[in-house]
Image (tube, rainbow, N blue to C red; front, side, top):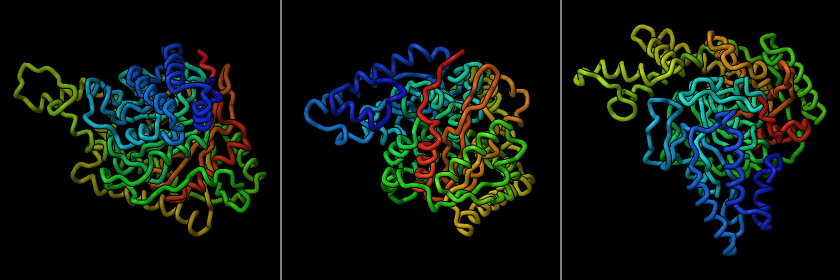
Amino acid sequence: MNPESQSIPSTRTALASGETTAEVLTREALGRIQAHDNSINAFISLCADRALDKARQIDQRIASGESPEAIGPLAGVPVALKDNICTDFGSTTCASKYLEQFESPYSATATQRLEQAGAIILGKANLDEFAMGSTGEFSASAPTRNPWDTSRVPGGSSSGSAAAVSAGFVPVALGSDTGGSVRLPASMCGIVGFKPTYGRISRSGLVAYASSLDQIGTLSRSVADTAAVYQSIAGPDTNDSTCIDMPTGDMLAELEKPLEGLKIAIPDQARSDVIDPATRLVFGMSCKVLADMGAELIDVDLAHAELAIAAYYTIATAEASSNLARYDGVRYGYRAKLEDSDNLEALYTKSRTEALGPEVQRRIMLGTHVLRAGYADELYINAQRVRRLVKSDYDAIFKVIGAHAVATPTALGPAWRIGEKQDDPTDVYQQDIMTVGANLAGLPAISVPAGYVPAGDHTLPVGIQFVGDALSESVLLRVAHQFEQNAGMSGRVAPVTG
C-alpha cells in the first residue's frame, strides 16, 4: 500500500476486502525502514520477528471470519513507539547510554492498549536522551534527521516518532510531550502532533522526565487517524493516580461539523517579531482560512506568555533532577568501573558522568540548583506561581471570553541545520515559547501542517497549533480536522532528500 494513501480507515478497508494482509503491510513498512532509515535514524531498535508474528495472528483471525473492526480499531496498522515508552519485549533505552541494556519487565498502559486495538508495533523510535531536547540531536544513538532535508533537525524530543511518520515508514507513532515534544517535531516534519488534557492518557510505563508535565501523545498524517489512536489508548487507569476517571467518548463523531459559530482566539504573541517572517505569513494565511470557514477570530493577549519559558524550565528541570536521581549506577542501568568499589559517591559520580549526555547533565544541574535550600522558594515556588498565572490567562480566554480554541504558530520557524544552535542552549529553549503554555496549564493542544516556507534549496513545513480548554478534545480535534481539510496541507510523505 502506498504510504501516502495509508490511513487507519484505508487499512481496515483493504484488510476487510482481502486487498492486502497485515503481514504484507508489516513487511512493506519494514522494507521502507530498511531502505531509507540509514539516512534518517528514526529507529533505535526494531522487533521485526515479533511484529510479523502479531500480523500473522491478525490475518488468521480475519481468515477465520472475524472482521477487522471486531479485532480492533487499529487492526493491522504499523506503529512506532518512542523509546521512553516501556515494552516488555526488546529494550527501552530512552536513547541513553545509561539504559542501553535495560529491558522493562512490563509494558506501558498505552503500549498494551495499542496492541489490544490491533496495532502492530514495529520498533522503538529515537529521541533526545530522556526526552530532554527540542531538536533530536541529543541521542546516544546519533541524531535523527529531518526527512524533508536530512541536513536539518526534525525537532524533538519525539524526533524519531515524527520522522518515521513523515518519511512514510509508519502511518502512526506515539511520542511524549513535556513542553512541546510532540508538537514541535510535528511542525518541523509536516505532520499532525497531538497531546490531550493532562491525565487523559495514562503515564504508567512512560519513563519520567517531569511528572507534572509529561504526557503521551500521538503523531500521524491526519487528524482523523489522530482521533482514532487517541480514543484507543486514552481512558482511566488504576496504575496512574493522575489519570482522569472519565470515558473519552467518540472522538470521530463530530469531526465533520463545520466551524460556523466557533470562536478562535488569536493571541498578540502569535504575531510577534520573534517568529520567522515567512512563518508569520503562513500563520496569517491560516487565520484567513479559518475565517473563510466561518470561525469568528478574536484578538486576545496571553499576558504571562513571556514568563512561561522561564517557569517551564525551572519546574521541568527541578522534577528531572528528582526523577533522574534513581540512575545511580547501583540499582540498574550503566555502572562505571572503579578500583575502589566501596566508594559509593565516586561510583555515582563516575557512572552519571560517563553515561549521561551533556543536555541531560545540564538540566539535572539546573534542577538541583533550583531545589537547593535557600533557592527553592525564590525559584521553584515562584515558577509554580507563574504556572497558575499562565493557566489563568487560558481560563479567561475559554471561560470568560468563550473561545473554543487558541491558534498560534507551533514553532518560531522551520527546521534549522543540525549543529546550528548547539552552542546556545537558551536559543533552543526559546523555540518552545508557543508550546509550553499548554503543558503548564495541562490543556490539550494539536499541531497541524499549515504551509511551507523557503529554506535554502528546499521548502520546509511549518505548523499551526490549536490549544483547547481542559477536556475539550472533541472540539479541538474538530477545529484541527476542519482546518486540515480546507488548508490541504496534511497527508504528504516527505521526499527523504539529502
